[in-house]
Length: 379
Ligand code: ADP
Ligand code: RBF
Ligand code: MG
Image (tube, rainbow, N blue to C red; front, side):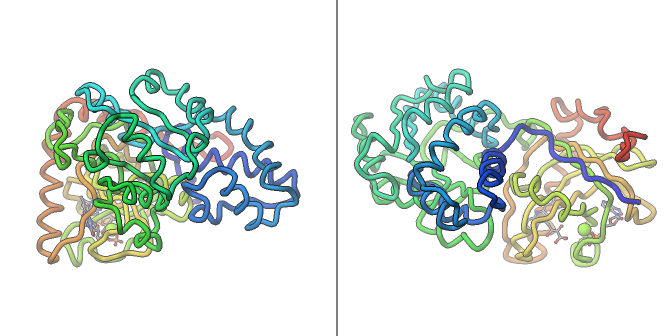
């Protein structure tokens, strides 16, 4: 039986908005957009990024023309942009504790303000906002960050920068600031480009303010962080053949080829939630999303361990997951035993937390038990 995968329920990521705009524009130029080359453009000033794009795809227009056409299309779409997981929580927390925060981007100031206008209250969170058009040199030059520090009246070595691009990380370090990188370029190949950061995180969910002398978050519940739930499902497929055999912990792998885009947008890490298994019921689960650093996989996988003893395998069964809490980022371990012990600890955390609100509320989510819709809409 051919089963369609169910995508994660979110508004569009910035990557998707870029795909949308470029697909439309490229078609007008008789070209095919294929998302390649983000690493060359990320964090650059718009005109530089457009020049690279025009050259890489041999577009029959100038960089200026590309910007003239694309800018209004992006403007129409910013209201649909998804915030990075953990972003809202972080700025609200810092603002509530009266820690001055600023926004420094290579985008022109007008674009920044346009984007911010779709996030209620956000503009007021930032004491200083600097656009790439307000400095002589954009990132990777430190000017944008030194300007921020000047306007805040704070020494650079008292500033902490959070950056997603290698260009930005360079700018922050060159300004003499501490830099935490949350890479937008998530593939292994780009790891080296973030090396000069003081710390690299998989997502803002892993940001621990106390590491930097800032007040810690108080929103963890039962050793996990409640998150906006996300939904994913598909037939259980064969994995690497080592869950039960090597670790003694079976993980019901989901196929990833069919939803690479969706998966590339999920934050890597260890999560807890509920699993619905066709004809068998709803069970607690704890899972890893990512590259399994201990095994250094080449593929990003989704691997739920259902906290229940089953008498047999269930390959091919439809599995539904509602992911409701975040436990930690994926890690490497000095030994297999250490990895196993940590996964068992994750299992205990999930077992306890899922009995408690808000995690327990989702046990009855209809997504877990709704029969699959076939293509023609028939159940
Ligand atoms: P694979 O490498 O093929 O994923 P694993 O050793 O990880 O194999 O075992 C996973 C398989 O074991 C699942 O696909 C499922 O059929 C079965 N299984 C049995 N009990 C469980 C459980 N509690 N959680 C997840 N999968 C289980
Ligand atoms: N693999 C890692 O390399 N690092 C981890 O931190 C990690 N954490 C996990 C947590 C849970 C709850 C589960 C179920 C798996 C985790 N794994 C981790 C993945 C494990 O390596 C994988 O399931 C096996 O390799 C089987 O494919
Ligand atoms: Mg497995």
